[in-house]
Length: 519
Ligand code: BG6
Image 1 (cartoon, rainbow, N blue to C red):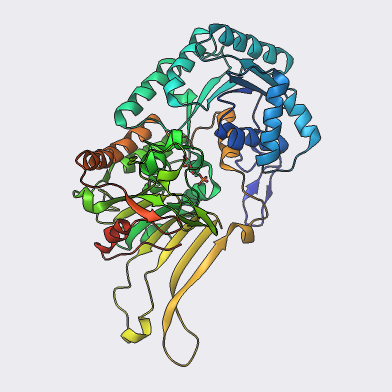
Image 2: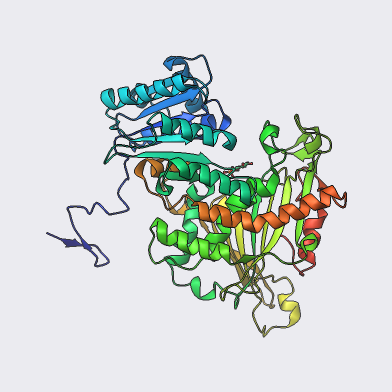
């Protein structure tokens, strides 16, 4: 029997299992985390697992195995997860959820070269399959520096952990940095590919797990009104900003030698750019999305004169949130001569019919004025204004701003008449805010992505082709900066903490007759 909705759509009371509105619940499975003592595990991965359990999206027998070089037993590991969940989980703490989840915790001590430890890991997984019903399905989360990936995946292979029995799965989850440049990214991909087939490798770019980022595709392709103007006929330029007010914190070891471009532009910002600029996919499956993203990434070009179209900076001492903060060179673990940039801005183009001639400006910095990530699509001015010039003096360009975070939503900026008897037109905005339109709160990116790993749902995970294409874009810029350093020609320009970056970044836009937005 079928019924109809108010809009006339047919509904089947025996609900369609393909219905994407139904909660997606992972089947029997477990996860092993390498690097349980790291920041990422404690702040993101462990809390997300608890949040998924709390929302009823994990199987009842879910198991979590920690692997680290620590003299711990299962209870010590459970305590670490407990503290992480208490401090960082999004949803409320419920004893009964915790009790059930923590019964599936195990800890295996050992280092990555330790064959005995990997044998114990295999026995632990077999025991979990028996007592928790994880059924031979396990994900290995490598929350460890990439230089250890090769050793760990080889160990998984040698100890019979990498390859599942029929109808079961084994997956590996890796975090950025996916290499240091194109050559090292290729090496890393080869290392993973020696053991795991491409469809079993899940690369986390947590920006793709954010609701607002996924919504870019919904906005563009579920509506009729944006696409007709989404091209070089109407768009003047695009600004993609990821500003942070924090400094490098305790991450000097990771950050020094990496810098803003590798840390964020190579992955998060180029993925945002791909979603904004790609053509519509034929379907929403992983293969169709990747084809379109790869096409647009392959069409991205760099302008010729990199000294004029890129900018880099380093934060100096200043103020952040009313507190005096140290400059980059005074952060613990950073040498006085470090040339690692904490701010990077670059100008890119796209050589295709839709975007030829439209500049995309990408910038990211630490210790800027406030934390904000947004994509602003700035439109050309109206071809003709039938008003006295004084009436439109304060009118700027129309813009559609995707507010990725915080204050998630969309803003449309356009001109409107100021009420009164005279004629004056000024900018106004029309806003969509998640809080105002939906009662559901957004899950953390890691909840979504970990659930997708357990479900084997790949659309939100970049493939190695995308990673390599992104490095191809960035490598010439990094090489250019390295040459400048070697020749002592220029260094990252200092900017005061709490400001909006170095003057050279402003000059870069001024050359094109534009200014950065001050979000
Ligand atoms: C990470 C970077 O990928 O993203 C960090 O390595 C950065 O340097 C972080 O602070 C920001 O993430 P979010 O979700 O807070 O914008």
